[in-house]
Length: 273
Image 1 (cartoon, rainbow, N blue to C red):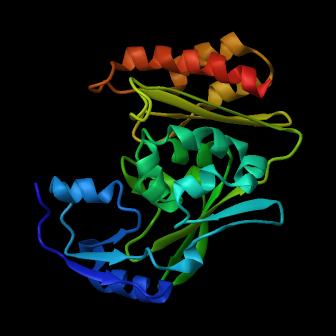
Image 2 (cartoon, rainbow, N blue to C red):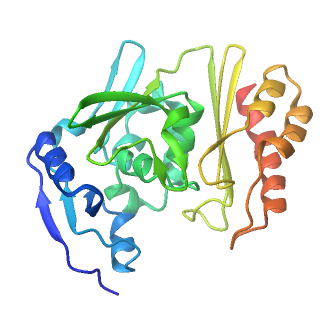
């Protein structure tokens, strides 16, 4: 299939992109890497009147460490983050997860910000951001703001981004010697969306468990977190029965997904020890 006709603007600055989005409201969509949006356009599951291309905005690219936080620009390609020594050193959870995103051809074009803004509930990066207690940087006509990952993912493909706003970067606390990170997912084939996955981080006595593929957003398993923090692994696994309520889908039933989540927890707990 082919997409419906649309107008196209290639923004030369962030301000120009925000102005175009503000003028057209819900009828406008941002395109960056296009790895999710282009298939949706071709299948006519998305039919915007205007595409605002932000791919040329150098100000939204790059990886930097400052004041104990690692900042990754929204237009940083996934493959760039995957190969970055700074990401490997200061955000090892991201380094573990990035090779699981699609295939190399997809990561060559896909952007960090695009994955977070789309908020696919089976995607790796939103769960990693949530597990790390990260933040999202947003710019709009009313100025810039930061939103904690815990408050960013609202519902299925819904985020805290308001009409006319652009996700400009993500920030995660820099890894330190007292931190541990763990990641695992279960998919039918490498590169497929996960039937269930888990991104986890431990810092001193605090554990954050972010499951993906088991709900309409990445899901914090807070009862399991508390149990795992005190070293009670099987108690944590049992707590997933109340923490998670996965829906049935074409890949597996909710009951199977809950069993997969327990398997993932036992695997990842070894990385956090």
